[in-house]
Length: 398
Ligand code: NAP
Ligand code: MG
Image (tube, rainbow, N blue to C red; front, side):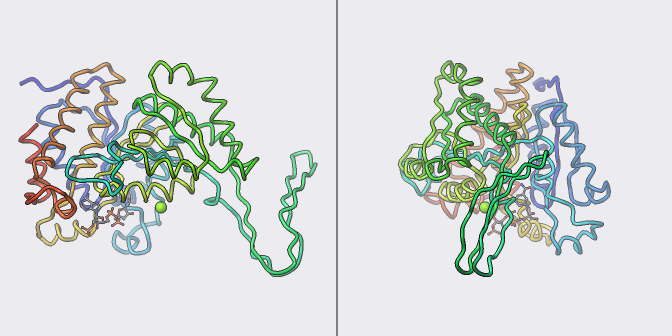
């Protein structure tokens, strides 16, 4: 059998710990036998990030701008314990943060839905994809404790020195105050990423804020989304048969719970932080959650939503058997291969991505799964496989 040819490389970002082990197994068992895989390889493993003073992370993001599609393995974000463990020169920043800053993208997280792993919310039949605005608001806020009576104002000083003031509150005793901001440019990028991704995946887009209360702050989000939609996306959405739907955040939350899924829910920074944890836990498992960073220019970086599964890695190093779920990492690869195929007009590559996803889902639905899923499945007497055996079982079906 001839291997599937690729015309343009993918950017491959290798990572750390247990997911690095899975990464190699996936390539060896599921990809290399079928595809003449072309990648530009960047080793984002912590040791190599440390050796290159994290330049490798920057280089991998720049390569993503060049080739437009990347696939990333989970990576360690260093903390104090990792400083000692890896004898680091510095506490390097989160690679995801660095990449996101360079690509100016929005992260879309979606569950992989299979029969036998049922969402807690019985109405949810299709995935709900959460898009979180990753800039500003309370995450870049400044705060003060107000010790006693006095006046708090917002003061804007323009470049020419003119000032505009707005009273926050006339305090008659101790209290607290918070100032936060966002940028029209960042909101516009977020909106474009959301509209583009909705078109790309042919799903409706929901967006919600509290614009009835926050008549300037949240209302600006609503207005920017609407302006960009009207000017750039209205016709394309109609052609694709999808809808852009704006509502109040409390209405959105209520509707989400009673919906059947199958749409993208764009959230402001805080809403996305909170709601993505609710949606992902209700769908069953972090190991079944994919993540894609989409830039407003149309660059895509695919990955699993979970981390490096450190605890399993230490077992692996001790020579113990692990049963680590590779599904989200497999789907990171299929997402990237499908997108590569789409951009290059390579139907064979797109079809392969579909077959690999189907083989993975069929394996679980046939009752063969890793331990994390076996604990929550409604399938009776599932077969619990170790990390490698699960990938082999997928390979057999493929
Ligand atoms: P984690 O790697 O997501 O794992 C947390 C726990 O969730 C695991 O111990 C395991 O539970 C379960 N789990 C997660 N993924 C699983 C899978 N594929 N199969 C089976 N079980 C799975 O989070 P963490 O332990 O908090 O973080 C470890 C490292 O990952 C940290 O250094 C962190 O910086 C990094 N991280 C990276 C990313 C990224 O690159 N995108 C994201 C998050 C975290 P049991 O142990 O109970 O089996
Ligand atoms: Mg959170």
